[in-house]
Image: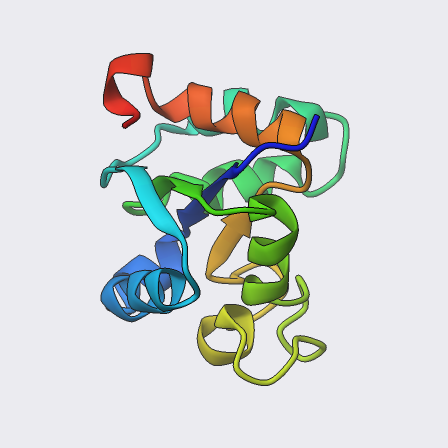
Length: 139
């Protein structure tokens, strides 16, 4: 199921460091249309719900603590080939391995504080977008 939508969120480190505007600008310059956007702060419980797939992993508690440490900016984006094109735009999870000019190369501090999330499949984009946005919030 290929769709034209993907989900992203600017993570607490990038928001705290004032990179939200620059990241959104890069997203729009890459041809993505923002379908839904808001600024929220997750509780550790809500972060745990979002990352439930990682519950048994050793990094789960640290991930939940990090993702609830400050505001985030979740978005639903639209563009042809949205998931794959967005994964290219954000770059590798490890910013040291990310291509020049990608969001993570420019704004990530580490593998853990990597500035931005991008859905890895059309199915997950739908699930993740629906986690943050009610249908009436998506245009």
